[in-house]
Amino acid sequence: MAHGLRVILFNTEEDYGVTLRRSVLECGGTKIVAEVDEPGVLAQAVQQIPAQLLIVNLDPNPEAILPIAGEVAAAHPNLAVFAVSVSTDGQLILSTMRQGLREFLTKPIDPETLAQAVQRVVDQEELHHAPAGGLHLGMVGGDHHPLGGRQGAGDGQAFGALDLDQ
Image (cartoon, rainbow, N blue to C red; front, side, top):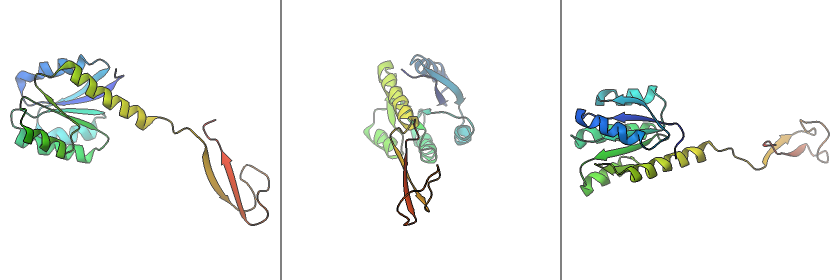
């Protein structure tokens, strides 16, 4: 499962905060680094607090919260943004995806569904930060190779191949 995935929670429903927090922490390997309950400070919190995942409770007013979540998702393409709502309305789900959010989770949040969604974020993080590997090639100009020795046949061009991962 996740290893130290940093999560910001956005929730304006006071009664849902404990449930949302518990759901995220039960995934294992997640760390809640901030909880935001004011839509006006969400963008600032995401800008200032490093995180890999933002979970946004769209309730009780998805029409007001979704555009803000969409702006955050667009401004931070490396941040996974999940929506949570009691609604199963197809138009809301479609709007959520069009706004750039990665997942739409319905309440009550199914622990396995959340764990799978979080694992996809972890997998993408690992892929994004994985070492490139392989052979790195570079062109060098002039008759002399930077690591010493004359290269080429006096044509002024040299080609060097170095495996920088070794």
